[in-house]
Length: 127
Image (cartoon, rainbow, N blue to C red; front, top):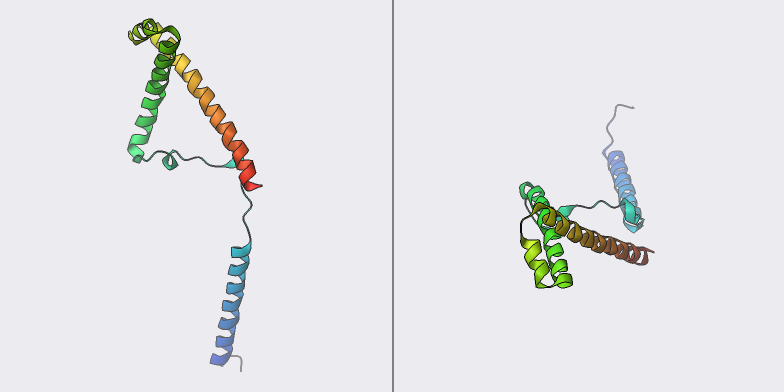
C-alpha cells in the first residue's frame, strides 16, 4: 500500500510544515539583530547626496577642487583681510595651491571631528 495516495496525510503534513514555518518566522522576528560595529558600516554617497549615478563622480571631483579652495579663500580673507582676498583670487598656481591646501586641511579637520562625534554617538545609541 505504499503507492496509495492519502489526502488526509498530505493535508496534515502541509499543516505541520506551515506551523513550523510560522514558528521559525516568529523566532527570526523576535530575534534582535546585533548592531554592526562603527567601523564595519558601509557608506554610500547616495544616502547623503541625491544625484544620478552618472553625475556623482563629476560632482565629487568638483567638490574636491572647489570646496577646499573656497574654504581657503574664506580663511585667508579672515586672517589677512581684503589683501588676502585679492592675492588668493589671482590665478597664480602657487597661490592657488596654497589656498587649496589650507582649505583642504580645514575641511579634513572638520570631517575627522564629525567622524569622531558620530563614533561616540553610535556607541551610546547601540549599547
